[in-house]
Image 1 (cartoon, helix red, strand yellow):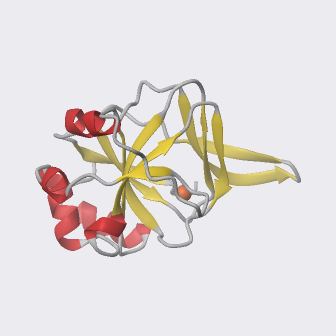
Image 2 (cartoon, helix red, strand yellow):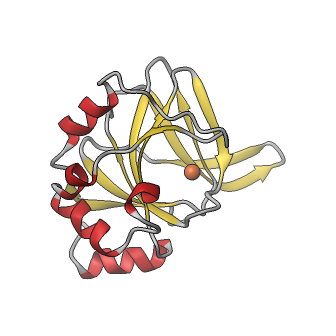
Image 3 (tube, protein in one colour):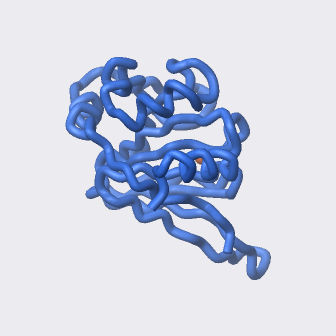
Length: 170
Ligand SMILES: [Fe+2]
């Protein structure tokens, strides 16, 4: 079984504020490199969540601005299978889990055009460690999908060990 993601024991304390930021009418940054539309939550907001404060204190990939994002996937869109080139792991939390979307990893290839998938069904408020080096994709139906994603400086296995050491695994 490929280790695609890990559900953490901790949940967010700032989901209302993050959802308000998504819906406040401020502009989404539409990146020209073809990845997600995004917004940047403030450091004060992120650090008011005890778990995220711990992550930001020790394990973000770059500086705060380039490691902490809210990614928005537009309605009726598909983000194609890919691996993240700039990071190997992230902490993810789906801000609006009621959105009709599916997030999944490609876990094996049967035939030329068929593969098996492992879905990540995000629980409300729950943080996940995400293995960005496994091919993954998202498909969205009729509403926006908002994801908090924090790029980590160590690979998935290393971060999983650290999260276990600090009792953040179930
Ligand atoms: Fe990705």
